[in-house]
Length: 499
Image 1 (spheres, rainbow, N blue to C red):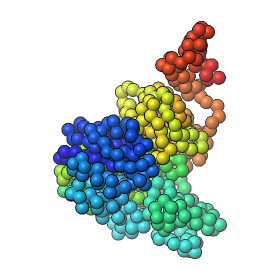
Image 2 (image 1 turned 60 degrees about the vertical axis):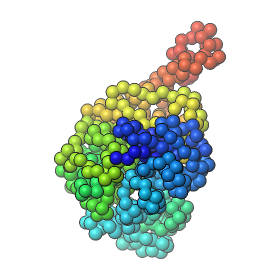
Image 3 (image 1 turned 45 degrees about the vertical axis):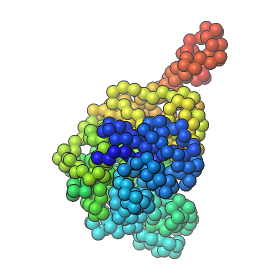
Image 4 (image 1 turned 180 degrees about the vertical axis):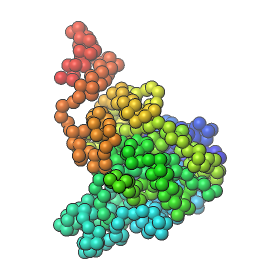
């Protein structure tokens, strides 16, 4: 096993990897930019190395500085986390050249799965179900020709990357002309590659993904599925496991899992990966189509850990060190239900980032509640990085008990000084269709009330009032003392604040 692991990332995922390393006696190294000198992940590591200025292009995306930091500290492995360099083949190649183990898949697997066109072709050869489409579209005339074959609506996607960049849904020729140009420009800016591909837009489907884990000894298993359909601008916001669709039977789960294993084996995959599918519910039964494979650990991996009892980071480290996975498909369990809410520092109505200093912070506690946080009280939330500041994950014996536990956890969460999407989560978890498990990737568009800045529920108002009372009591400000002299209780002061 490794003696020292460097995490080429920041925030909650870096702290998460350090946690598993610490549990198994592995020393840890953090890297940080100017903006992150006092960040939580830096304090969580045994050592920390400054790698450059605040912009990620000059720090977290600098392969040379990451390798130099590993060599300087004697780290024998690099874990990439997610985002930044996690799916960049150049980091894998640099690790190989330096004699450092990369905790992730091979360059070959990244090359194939990191390009949506190559991935589609590889999956066609492996007999994996695909949405009808056309690859490597380089001009609008090709796109129009493809549309005649496939039909509208169409989805335009960047060939060289994901994360919603370069993605458009178009319903006709005029939209396609505009959408193609916009998607190609956005793809070129984000990935340095303006190629796109088009496929039939499955308009009423869930986003269901299968977690896989593979070792270099020939063992590949699937660890059940996650439903990530609640998204805004193609970014996941709420994830849960297992999928709540009534059409997700044990037989369908097994079929999807076996397809995901076939996907991984087609590229000799080693490590943790996620195979994403569109899951379409029809009167004749479910249909699912391969979307893409993410060659890294996912943000939402805690819900899988909650229902399987596995430590996916520890599994990653073991197979990267050349050890056998140590368990087979028969040993993968499925217990209860888990829900994860991503907490963003952003305006919950317009979904715009809300950087600033966190004045007060309190996370929920209790059985079945897990916090993966990138911040603490007094931390500065930078405008230079992703606005996700934490993930709250809960487990319950069934879906409704997990949802209710999450509502309680969100109600106990206090984050003051910046705007967050806590109110969005509270509204969504109380909404009837969500509670019934009846939703697709268009859930937010079809339920604008969960984003609305309108009348707040009594439950949410009570939670906010309690948070305000707690904050006033803790801060002991002059205003609080003045209110105290007026004979007002904490609760009365909170009610004044609410009004």
